[in-house]
Image (tube, rainbow over all chains, first blue to last red; front, top):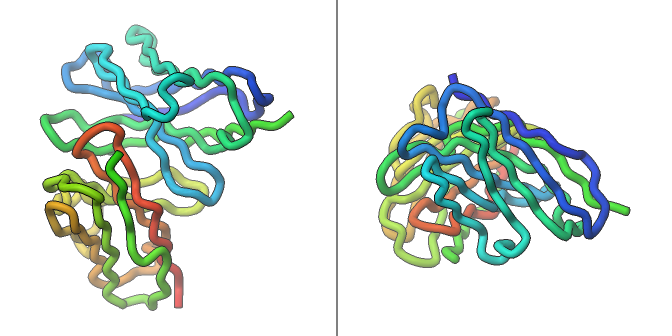
Length: 122
Length: 107
């Protein structure tokens, strides 16, 4: 059974750096084809994909946020991290991590964490 | 980036109605299209992947179709638990993008 859970601060100040942790079980980032994504959703708005890390440490970022985002993993602890610098009130959102279905070509997010709401305010 | 446009943005329907939501991609994406259902305060739930494949455990009243740039999600007979917001998402390539959502409300 695959589960994921996000953790991190609920409140950050503008200009601060946010670090979120995704702790997962039921799969391993040592397995070929496996990936974990971060996706966010501002209150009342649509979903926005942010970043992806694969088992082989290949990484992808949303281009408009690339200079603010870093995704890393600790395979031994079954954790993926998202670091976002220079936080702004517009970054207030629920942040989700998700398991990417392995496979060639088209993939999907088949398991999601419960999400963690991060507010940015002074 | 590939833009995904859903229509309508919201709709009102009754239990038992047949409901169709459409999603258009700004460029060709083959069948690389997924559909998610999201209820208030909950994470999205994968319904359909690769345009028309039903995710395990999802009721058969949900179906997906289309290819290229135009796609649809159909609920054959709307049930009380189906009132939610639905999102399409392209998986053709990075950056992976979502539609703006379609909220299905009770008439």
